[in-house]
Length: 191
Image (cartoon, rainbow, N blue to C red):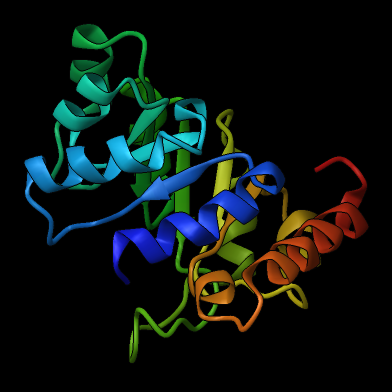
């Protein structure tokens, strides 16, 4: 999706979401920097999390960075850039334990349900999510999450959800975001 189209959607939905994870793996650092500069005209930087690119997160003053298994470790990032919120993508409880030991602020766990972005890969499921949420770190669930299964995710102890296709591929992204928010509220009334 072109960044200008994404910007239009994000302008509408950002008041209803906690964070916006900018995951543009194909873009160069310069392109990603320019994208953040464009987005920041209408979206608070305090909501932007940059995928993997610590340099871009720091130079744009984004809220944080989301690290993958191949990224620098959270302890290294936090030592050099203490102002960044640091999340780690994980796929198991042991990954979560490592992220916690290494100083991550939160973890992104998944994929919980079958997902279009992970065709043919077995989802981790609610049971594994429940195990991960026992860790003393906020756990954000990702992967195949719909308004209909959001309550299960909340009941499993997740601190929140991350959704891409369910919002960006919908006919009305704002309506979709509101459906997820309502589902979170119905799950435990706290989100």
